[in-house]
Image (cartoon, rainbow, N blue to C red; front, side):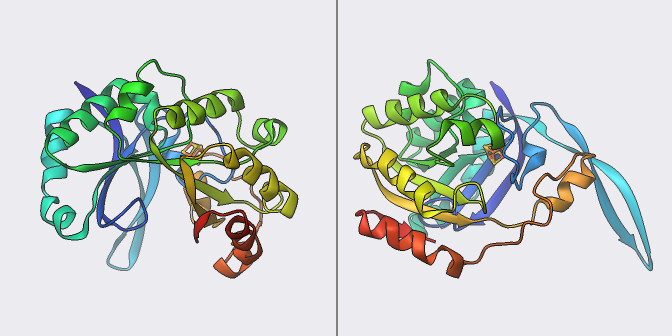
Length: 262
Ligand code: SF4
């Protein structure tokens, strides 16, 4: 079996516990306006402009983002980092894009990792319905589940696709008893008011599997990629947020009984 990925990042320290190898799977049904990996969205290889320096001169050329890889080859890549996993309590994280879009490939990779004793995380926005979700839960140690808003209208305006699918998947993963960490990208004027956060807290309060929250401040690092892909960056000149900007919402989550990391 093979799947479509666009990157493998080694020594990642923000994608779950310990030192991790993060596999970025290509394809996502959502279109979050702030997405900092727009090259992950289309479910096909695509051209992205790249600048290269040769002496004093700078050249622009296209390179292809996305390639197919077999589970055998991917496992070979993952195993190279075994020693780091063992020493740090790390493992592999499947991210994207949306890993659930390639549910059969994801499930096969997870099975193979668990058979070799490798810790697994799935970083998902929960945006795809799949009959394989219960099986995926069996082989996933931690879900890093994006919770972008608790309001359907906000979801429709800024993110697209189906809000109810996301909520159904969140509840189904919880019903499987899986460990879930909620990841909240904090976006100015989208989900950063006290009221926005209270609504997210009310949503998560009903899900006992979620006791840890990661707050991810908005940043503009992906803006340049949109130009390189020939697309529009729709966040205009929205400024970066800093950790300090998130202090009051961090306190809201703490007061509500969540463990919060920023
Ligand atoms: S869910 Fe993630 S990968 Fe998909 S568009 Fe949103 S930010 Fe990008």
